[in-house]
Image: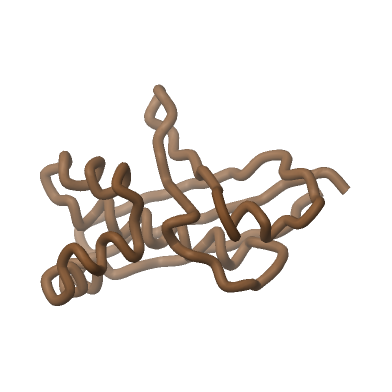
Length: 125
């Protein structure tokens, strides 16, 4: 059964401007330490930050309950083969109540000015 589908697109310059304006305060409010480290190991960290922000927003849109979720409770990591993976904790995990989460599918892409992500959440009834 599909619980939800979410998609989001983010302008990379918007993320760059937020980091330039609010610095570490913005980064720590939106991203986990691992996500920040991953992004800043890239040639252009703002591409990675933007697409991760889009993935978090796509997950929120796909989640079955629209409660307040902390963006740091949704972490975008990569499997050994490079494929993206979402790790949930706190309220992001609680959003499913007693439902069993089967799979969370995520696809992300970015180019010079945009990051886009799609999330599909499957589960058991």
